[in-house]
Image (cartoon, rainbow, N blue to C red; front, side, top):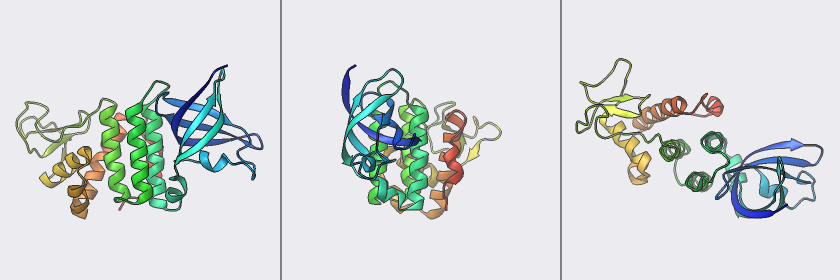
Length: 241
């Protein structure tokens, strides 16, 4: 059977037998791949550390009927230990990995791959606060998946913003006339922050007030849970301020 090579980020691992491991990966060009990594749990294995969660590697696969087999792995981004040593970063990375698993399949998902790798790199290097890295990642990942939120003009009548209402179900702000019962109320600074998180405008995000960040995180959490089928279990372990 054929072999193939691809960049991949490790999303999840499971023990198999005494020395093997099943690895779930998001690849750059082949979507999600589940593969057996043989012997990686042995102390002498050189590949084991390269196939831990949140690591990014250049991997060669042997194609199988049900599961592929990892035959070679070379590290591209050694983010695993830096993330797992920081509990806040670790819980955030778990939410990201679960999100990537929910939003991708076995078809090519290069944008989702690049987005996840960039977010994990930011977590590992502590570029920004973990909570805001997660919020930005979630908004952008959902946008790539087809659920792009709108924080500018009214999604009901296109009236120019800013607007104080946000409808979780439709993912957009609404004016006072179009606001349905139960709409979330957000202030202008929160709306601007949400838009900046979506656009990756970190100069604004990093200097936003603690209160605005907390309210924005609540909106992002509710929006993500609504649009991702069955919600995200890893949110239960997430540390929020």
